[in-house]
Length: 140
Image (cartoon, rainbow, N blue to C red):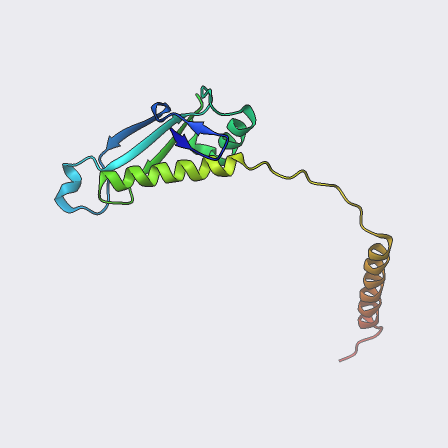
């Protein structure tokens, strides 16, 4: 079980790891060892997450979620398979933790009467200064 917070847990069986060959550092080893990790987590068919959390995950992940609702995280930064696996898991946990936080509802506000008059007064002042610059006949 992977614990997200006190209320949410995900069974490890719902997370799938695929190991692929990575580009980048590693010398000749790069061509022989599959050190990159591709983590797959099916968000839409997950039973342990509430619907609102699933929607926030899909919105936060963006292009990392396929049309079928599978989240794919690629980790190929490190040379070893184990460190890439840990990196992918940490990124998944960070995304899940971020998705559990409910966004605050925006409260619409109106500008105060004083701020409106202050803004209009400053506009009139600026317009007056520009009017003075226009002047009349400029014979240089």
